[in-house]
Amino acid sequence: MSGEGLIAEPRAVHASVGHARLKELMHRGTEFLGCKVAILGGAMSWVSERSLVSAISNAGGFGVIACGAMSPELLDTEIAETKARTDRPFGVNLITMHPQLSELIDTCAKHHVGHVVLAGGLPPGGAIDRIRRYPLAELRIARRIGYEVEANWKVILENYNECYHCGGVHPELCKVVPAFKQKGGMDLDWERGVPHREGAWTFTMSGTTNRKPFAGLNEDEQTRHKGELLYPNFMLSLSAEHAAAFTLWPTSPSHTTILCDFLFHPSEIAQSDFNPNDAVEFWDITNRQDWVICESVQRGMASRVFRQGFYAPMESMSLDIRRYIRERLE
Image (cartoon, rainbow, N blue to C red):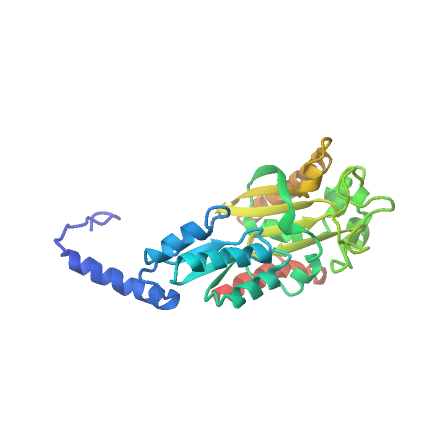
């Protein structure tokens, strides 16, 4: 011991000791996965497909198919092709925001896939039902904006989960969706969606656009806005003809990188006059307003006199993040 540091003394250790220790550490993983070595292939969209997955499994590891935006039919084919290339165990990674998650799980069960990895956390009850008519698996990213926010990721999720700040913070948003400022944002019906003002039906400055609504939406979804928070780090906002998807990446207790993807249907992107700016600019203004108040909350929590905050009954949804964290700490 020297000061606060440790001075390591080299010792000769036979290689067999290291191999035995590694085998001991890997035993739990190999028992669980059914493979020779406890090395699991990361699920990378467009990369982790039949060839790579079967190669990893044949080498003794555990390959994982990245389902991504695949339809159940495409996943069925991918699993079958992987099975034709290896007789060793492999798994499938499913994204919980996929609108056909149940069908994808059925496809995995049909092929007796022993391990299914869920990306995006476990979906809250009813979340898939609320968004199942939106063609999420078909949408493509037309624009991405990255934000560096000086606030803890949980503060940002809480901000997304409540609307009583909207009246004083989002004048543009409230012109399109007046319900956000009425009664402090209470009694919003997220099951049906939140109504726009008369004549408006999407998140743009005018509340309209030349893009067509998604096919298959019900009457409410063609004129109302929906949002879902999927723990631990994914926020999804749905308009009738586009989606804004937020992925949060905490980099420290007081900083979060946010990637905001704007998704549209390929048939609209293919139009010669396609221009996503009406939605992107509206969202960018709204987002930056949110980040300012999140950073203000973070500065308040850094005060020497801060101990804890208090929740009013109307803030019950903001308690979700507390429940989520507590359940995983207990």
